[in-house]
Amino acid sequence: MQARLLRYVGLTALSLMAYSCTTPPTEKPLTGTAPAWPPPPDAARIQFVREFSGPADLGIRPSLWNRIKAIATGQDQHDMERPMAVAATDDGQLIYVADPGAQCIHRFDLQRGRYRCLITEQGDVLLSPVGVAISTEGKLYVTDSGLNMVFTATPDDNALQPLTLTPPPDQPTGLAVGPTGDLFVTSTGSHSVRHYSADGRLIQEFGGRGSALGQMNYPTYLWLSSATELLVTDTMNFRIQRIDPNGGVLSVFGTAGDGTGSFARPKGVSMDQAGNIYIVDGMHHAIQIFNRAGRLLLAIGSQGSAPGEFWLPSGIFVTQDNLIFVADAYNSRVQVFRYTGESS
Image (cartoon, rainbow, N blue to C red; front, side, top):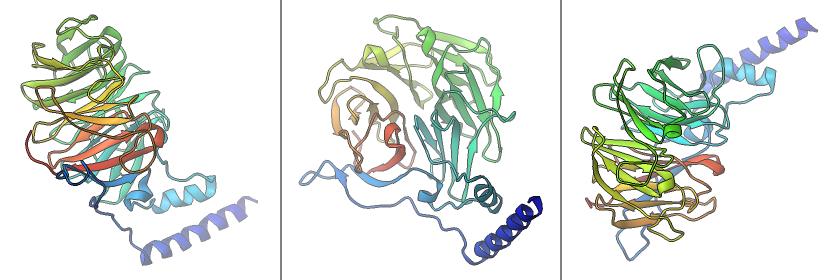
């Protein structure tokens, strides 16, 4: 029986090697056409590019060894189950997706045609990965709100390494990396944001539960737009706070409500190169775009599965090239858009 199995695996390997030699992997470029928003006759400012749910949608084929394992075990590469957060390099060629459903971080390397579902170095799956960020040097940072831990990895690492933060955050969710490698982490359980040095020492903490300026109520996602501006999704206060890195409040906007321009469950936050602020609202199944003064510019989305429709979306990431990645959680996909408009 064992001999037959080994012979089967050997023949399978030979056939797959022959296949891989004759059919090189293809990469699908991140380009696309309509639909776009707002609709005509207004000039389009947001254009749909593509969507993807797994490596195959990005033209990434499994490696020879992974294909052998898939045949032997009946398991294929991981498609996304419940993507909660997404981050990408400026050219959109390296994409990370935090997925509590798959209990890992999906790494899609379009340039090298590689995919990996990152777990810990000890082989343990993640419990609740909900936040991802990339440093200017390309280092990945991950929050796991269930494990109360932050992990890191380089683009070449095959596993996540734990990062020691002292004291550790309480239910970490969002995070952002400063230009010197310092780290801002949303400590949702303590209703605050903690600022750590590159070596993990606490520099300061700001927030605290409440609704006054600077106070927070279950904050979640973060975006560091520059060395002087931190955007905080103050989720259960139904608002966005613009804060300087020392905790000083620059401005606040947002109110609770069911209509466009208000918030029901604000989550992911990001900013494009024109200074437009993007807020994902899970209960609205939409992205709302504001200027820095908090004026609504455009809203995209309704519940559904077509391009530009969402089902409980969560995270968002805008690259310096104005590619917009949205974690469409319960559609098990990431949608990609591009901002094509002018400065707000």
